[in-house]
Image 1 (cartoon, rainbow, N blue to C red):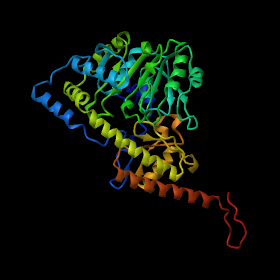
Image 2 (cartoon, helix red, strand yellow; image 1 turned 135 degrees about the horizontal axis):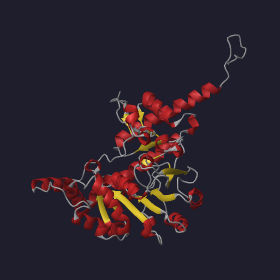
Image 3 (cartoon, helix red, strand yellow; image 1 turned 120 degrees about the horizontal axis):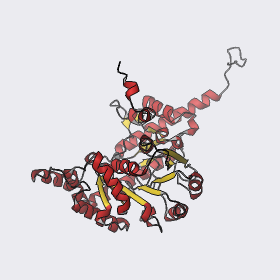
Image 4 (cartoon, helix red, strand yellow; image 1 turned 135 degrees about the vertical axis):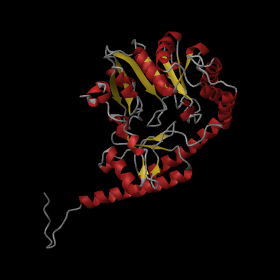
Length: 406
């Protein structure tokens, strides 16, 4: 008799379902602060370019490595915006940043190879690594150290099996960014090894500092680093599923091979939209980033007023406050907040063991929604504190004698 359970891949069966999924399908009266996507629509000029491409019949397979025009525009954009020097032939267009990561991992990881992953981290990284037989080596970053990877912790995590170091800054779920000095120290450790670096820069454009640093800019790092990004976050194009990976051709070529066999190419229509986004929509990106900064300032201030410890985000649109004082796990807190406070946020445990004791709040929502949500969170936290105080008080029997509890 056919057994569908036994038919499933053992590697897949060992991986837990996506931890954030249950907080997406919500009753109408629950305010969601869970989604990690812009609340803005795709810029009009980008959408118009896609419609024009369809009308012109540009609906056939594009080159598997991506339209030359888009690769050239991406190269020029990275040079102008972040002072990164990649030739067009060093740019591979992918089906979102997720495919860029998946194809990169599959191109270089063999069974037993180790990937160092600072936690808390994006929930999809570790399952992808494990599905190809890699071993995740988590490095827990703490609130006290600003959720940043330190050179000391990195050095301690390296073994002879270490193949890849994964970086993601500005970070999902913390919103934390690294400094040039942080990267200088990390690069010094990596330089002593044969490790490949993957830096996921999907939120680079949404950095609130004047200059967003990148490890690629450190001496000796370009030659061993894969730079991943895409159009989903900064350009509000999540549904278009378009990303890219940059690097020396000797690193890009193996990834291109995986890309060809797995997806062949990214959508040509989406690529024409992305080309317009790079060439004509930077004002839209600047306006969206300014709105995120305003929201960041508001949400950070309110969380501080509520009294939940957190690090001020330096990019992206997430903040990760601590809820340890409640004595609840991250999942328990989120379930009760949704049930009693009618607000949905994501348990930090969905982002690895380093996220336990925290919750991720997305502020990619309009200000009215954020105001109401923060008021509800404040009321819920106050109730939890009152309940704790009440529970801590000794109980007394009716005759005045102290009651005994077992």
